[in-house]
Length: 271
Image 1 (tube, rainbow, N blue to C red):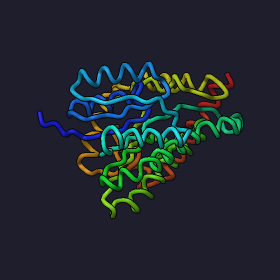
Image 2: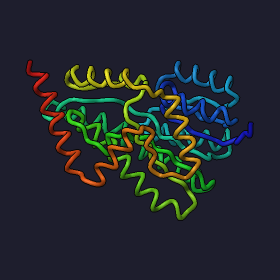
Image 3: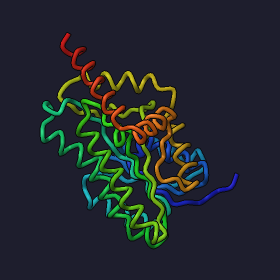
């Protein structure tokens, strides 16, 4: 097998999609900088990475803290002499009706899922420009399809999409490739981070995650292949691609469907 030797940074690498992305690159012989707030999970990811043929190091890193991301970038420069790929994957789940969400709920969601990506891109920008590297931002289908009961999550992920589109325009002429990934529900432990004013939304999401036939490893493989092929908007799910095509052709169809979904959820909750 051809080994790429790529130098890759993955935030949120302690579990779930972040771990699977690390393993996907490890199988290509990559050197990895693995970051997360869960140090125990990071240790397990590094062990798996080494078993898969990769190498790397771990750093505890809270993406809300720019100084920690800047320190991680400095470690990458010192240890790996730069980076080729930055994967902004760290994220949290949340839900609840807008009227019930507190401003603290909004601040928490935006600070991690949106500003964590902004700060990650900012911290690594000098290395990416020097190497003419690649940015992969993990958003969600929530960036494209704004389901009810998820307003703060929807807004954060839509922000990641808008940021990625902006970076594409600004950085491609400078040789830096940009990609944004919008997966639908897949088998992951995302709900471990869930925060919201009630459990109903969490239970709904849990059912969708459990019922998905697609694993985090499947998503990681798609991300690797599609980004290597140069595709900007990566939609790993067939149904997600179909829904996005419908919205592009006739947005009102999707808006009407989301309203019906909200009415159904409200009726169920009032029983």
